[in-house]
Image 1 (cartoon, rainbow over the protein chains, first blue to last red):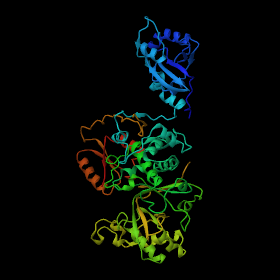
Image 2 (image 1 turned 30 degrees about the horizontal axis):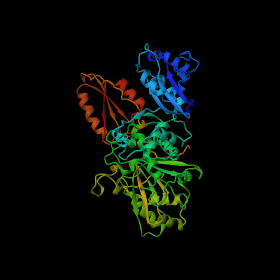
Image 3 (image 1 turned 180 degrees about the horizontal axis):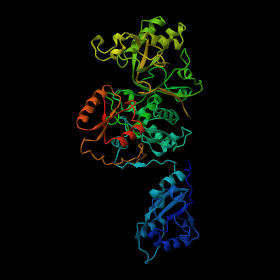
Length: 482
Length: 92
């Protein structure tokens, strides 16, 4: 990014353009100041030979004008130790005299006041090009709050917030955020629903600043959004559904440690910056760039606090098994984020089971309640096995695959119990399923087992899913691009 | 203090489009019925179909692969080029 500002020599410098009648008017003044050796440089924006003086400098590239935020011509600057200490805008004989500290300036033939014209460097048609060439490289519109406006209230008023306060995305903060990724600000990451808008790294960075992310979280946020907006994950459907679901994120790999994510005590709760802000950044991006707002395209009947952004990490170091990412074929050195279409977490208490088999039965019973006990196969689940529960399996030598298989086996139900009308409840499967058995979770990937949580507590946590597969959403794991 | 921030939105303004011309009569019109694949959408549309046919309309039936995603582009194109009007069965 070419954002180093060209330095100016100490003294007085002025910015002009030939196309400005005020600048034409004051040519004799400029000649006088040149002769008196008071002006160091005249930067000319549209004609390098205007005015024809030895101190005229070509700024037809507008680099100097843009970098010094010149908005009007003429603008006179006072430079001391390479830094601008004062400026005056437009032409006023009295003000210029005082500014330059001279008694005699101009003549009776020259009008004593003229406001000047707009600087070419603020021409709206040139902004994109100038920003790219000399600016921050960022192209988002700058929104300036009125001096009496409270900046935090102003962001609420503009509808940018999920209800919680936002960090103001100043250009400096957004630039710092972008240092967190090797990707360019204008890279298009995805088409973000529901409005199917091109989503750039720059817009993600702005929303990540607002969410409270640190720059080093940005790669996770970018990859999460890329994944969320895939056809398989179907962010559009998750947003539009009346069910209380959203993308649930979990992270594997060394980045968990380097950004200090929580995979232990209270991993699903409050208190950890990365856990709390990564998912929020994704949700804010969908809201602000995609246009997905509650009550509009987001039709959730009840919603869930998880929709602020539920994000956590797996405790790979404490786990008796290999990590979830390794199960998917990634190495321990690769960083991944997995997106699961889910609702809020719910605990499963079992403080009495001592054998792995009875605990598997118990956990299966806990999961059966997801969505509705009579609805099976269509909804996947995450099970985060707590350390004390996991030790029951590990001590008995059960592999993770075995735990997964046994829980699904123990979730098998007689369909006569599940069909419409069974147990005096209309909700349930169509009659044609009667006389058979079905597991709560599909055996080919219906259960994701993770390890995490605090050392004490004979509990696990489950996160119920949304309609799985092509009809709804398929959970996805992707490697995080740093 | 004045603060400047970068716009977090897509900076787009909504495009204004006129509504399509309403059809003046059902007699001889081709009406598309789009089932979005919600349970019992077909029951609702069967009734609508018989009512429309009684009024002299030709009815064509369409179905979205899933209610959770926008209708595929090809399906939208087919409906818009084949039908005079479309009725969509939303929700269950």
